[in-house]
Image 1 (cartoon, protein in one colour):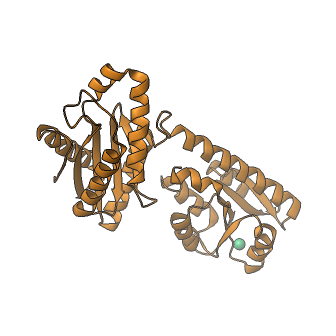
Image 2 (spheres, helix red, strand yellow):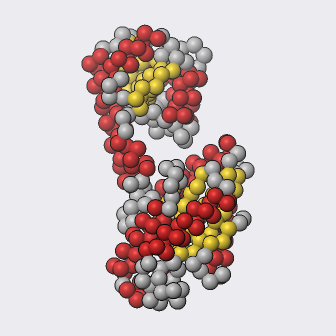
Image 3 (tube, protein in one colour):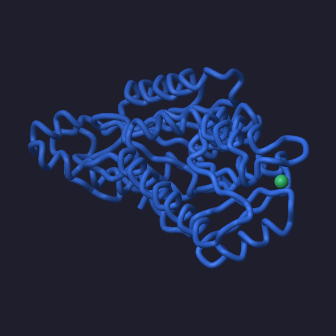
Length: 307
Ligand SMILES: [Mg+2]
């Protein structure tokens, strides 16, 4: 199962932000059974916790020293990583302007202090359910229907995200492009149904070779797959590629017309970069594609790596 689907089976993460300890404790008491609770007592802490822990819902006090609740919300909505986290504002009674501004800033709801446990519970549960459903729908929309691995859209999204991460943390990012050798001949010889089964088997073998939960295998299109390896140097990526080769070979799928040992094989191109500009992810992808081309020129069923 894809790790981002597994991730949906966990407890929801709830972030409580308030500069009064007693308010946090009251809310903590209400939700500690069913949620993983995170707490922050000022705006800076709240923003940091959001980036690190990506909560499913935030209960955000409006009035705090320094960065207030409205500003926290404004910043969260600007950042693509935290943009989708729903925010419920906690406002003082009769502060209608706070509520109007909060909703304008993109909050999903507001709660009035002093807190009424029944109301808070109902509202939090409603928004956690909505969040879960939208996460689930999003995850399903990012799966490749045939092979069950990530689809192209998910890959593009993750490439953008890990590229930004590489730029921020100055870490290396690797990509493996994978192509099934002579797949058209396979389809011509065995028919498209067997072709589909072959794609499923190869996807399964490739996935078995990817160990870390934050590595991503995706179907790039047709008989092409791609693997994204954050925080991985070229040598490390080549090791993964070799493991993939071994797993596909171990399938021993008959391919009478392949001309390469009459079994299904794959060609691979590996490339690594440290992000140096905001819009360079495409360059890394092209580098991996060039290496894949070299692998094909070299007779297929092999790996080529470099920039
Ligand atoms: Mg306050």
